[in-house]
Length: 287
Ligand SMILES: C[S@@+](CC[C@H](N)C(=O)[O-])C[C@H]1O[C@@H](n2cnc3c(N)ncnc32)[C@H](O)[C@@H]1O
Image 1 (cartoon, rainbow, N blue to C red):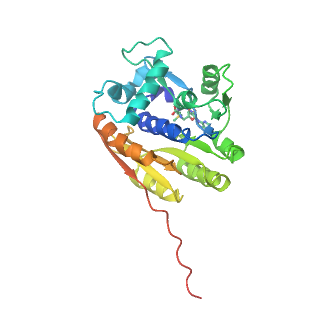
Image 2: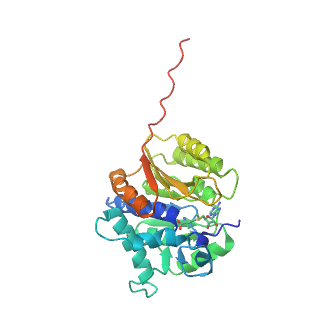
Image 3: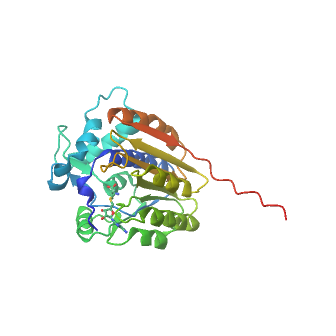
């Protein structure tokens, strides 16, 4: 396991994933019922953008830093809410509105949104990053950090007793068969917990492979968000990615339809939002 999210924190892929995550949380938590959240591939929770890892790649400069310095006028409300969540995390470290220094990973964004009584489990398999994640939430009883395989947790923890859940699946795509593993995990998850909301991140390094993965996610209700920035797909550097959302809450599509084109224009790219029709079973052939 070589992947460290610290090198990529706050890049265009995080912008897509985390804007959507903030909206999913907001909409799911607007109902007066308890929510279970599972972050299967959690990372370390928070990142120092000037630190050794993020500082080396500078990927946040072409991602969150562009959004944070964009004019507020005309900014879609979902983006403003995401930026407010990012700024709130940065302020915990004494920032006072200058250059963004700290960036919240998915566990921090989730934790900030939860209400008393909701439940949150974050899994991280990399030993060092799991330790960092445990430190990030030390003493916080609302967060259960597991140094464990998120795919196994998904199998073990679904369906949740709350019967309402958000499952974020954000693997590093180091393994050559990650798409297959991911599709299998989602199928298993849906068999156990068909009404859960699943947000599944994927890279687009090969258009055909990504399209085949999305097509294989054959859930009746799903929305596929994709973001492409400058550069060729498959030329080495990641320039495109997607987030497939199964069972999105009411109004999520509307929120992302407002946010995505704006994000794409600020990042100098293009975005798409598609609700693919579920495949219709073939009619039984006459005997
Ligand atoms: C893309 S990063 C996660 C970023 C995080 N979700 C966020 O948005 O801030 C993927 C993480 O998954 C971890 N990982 C890899 N395989 C795993 C597995 N099977 N179970 C849990 N975590 C895993 C990696 O160490 C890495 O920290």
